[in-house]
Length: 79
Image 1 (tube, rainbow, N blue to C red):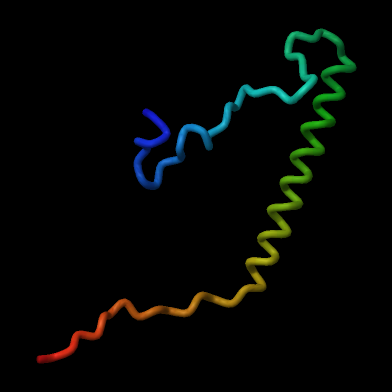
Image 2: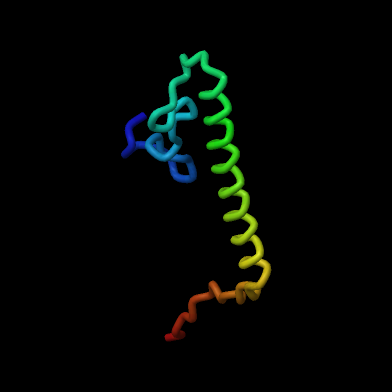
């Protein structure tokens, strides 16, 4: 499926990301415990940042007023 042919409501391929993508400097073949400890700390920090961001956004949304209903009727002139 090309980027131009994805269906409405579907996530385009370029936005899905690669779940196996590594960060710069990450070596999945490393056997060093220090490397594993370093990358666990990096991913924990990233996860904490994302959780904090989501919590902040959630709090902001709670403070927003509800959307106003809109009229979907179109007035028609009589002849």
